[in-house]
Figure 1 (cartoon, rainbow, N blue to C red):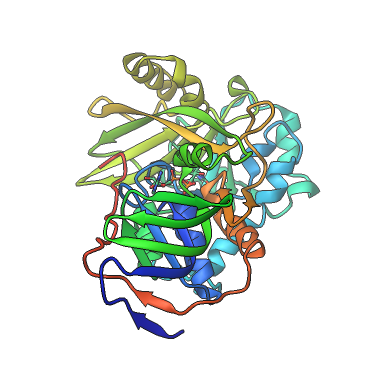
Figure 2 (figure 1 turned 30 degrees about the horizontal axis):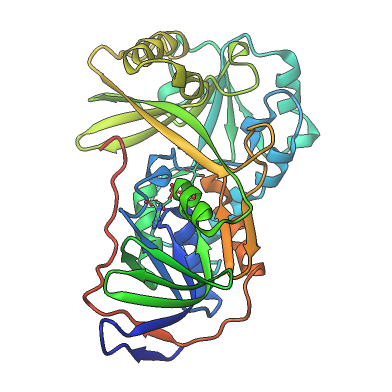
Length: 389
Ligand SMILES: Cc1cc2nc3c(=O)[nH]c(=O)nc-3n(C[C@H](O)[C@H](O)[C@H](O)COP(=O)(O)OP(=O)(O)OC[C@H]3O[C@@H](n4cnc5c(N)ncnc54)[C@H](O)[C@@H]3O)c2cc1C
């Protein structure tokens, strides 16, 4: 692709695509479009990844957690191919090249107490999910599970856990990723230009990939699409000697969802457990103090062999932002739809970002313009930090 200098700060910049929002959705789409020959400029108003993406658990999962009721579902089928796709990206075998991104764990587990129904146990061994889950024999239990007090069953899933900071950093190293509060200007129902301080951008296509921020943008552009929020109160446990734990705790008590979803992260010289699942979903109705107390009780039942007396507890309230669902449920797929020269997008899950990238590519007109150099006066976007740091 040819490059042309922009001589003045107030010169305008013509690009194939301007992307609003620097979470996984915006950054993935940006990388994929550049790899397919488009000129792309990404605009982030705060910090890259600062909202849901760095607050996520970084799990790239194959949907087994959606089968706990004992059957495959639309969601579990959509997501099943994703771990393999991400592994291709991590190996540099996909247009979105993720070589160098850190994998926190190649293995993800599901462990149960003895209350899990035989129906679910039989389902895990069935043809329907063959190859996606394997039972681990007691003599092969390692790490946090190699403890005589752990009496339940252990299954290994095909999921992996990524370090989201290194993921954001890798994706942001491609193309132009700038900081600014964008003002969208319309003409005849189309976005004609976007202003950020020091730059007037004239994109052929504008992509809204701003997570929660899409709501205000959609309203400003009067687009006929709705967004929903699904709130969580996550729990962060920090301590000097926490064992690595990457697993769903599953019990009958939690119905057909994991009771606690564990990931483990480095927090300075300590380890942090980041806890989601039912604990975080039901936690939205508790105060922070109540949520901490509830988490302590849950952990005492689920991992009674781990000593947490030296640990500090904190919580994080955060909303998931997705396309509106008629019953407020999690959509099965990513959302990407074109309205004139605007595409509205939500990935629904970090895991589904590659599928979102493919969907957006299909909605794009052919690649056109030459790439431009952004004036130095327009700052590059900075990186956000994960909630356990
Ligand atoms: C606690 C939690 C745990 C999760 N764990 C997992 C998991 O383990 N696996 C999984 O697959 N999914 C997980 N998810 C879901 C996943 O994190 C989200 O689906 C995904 O990160 C959403 O990405 P996004 O880019 O749409 O939004 P965001 O990450 O929220 O990014 C939106 C960006 O847009 C910017 N922005 C907003 N408005 C504007 C504007 N006007 N101009 C410019 N920029 C703007 C914001 O500052 C932000 O940087 C989790 C979600 C949460 C909340």
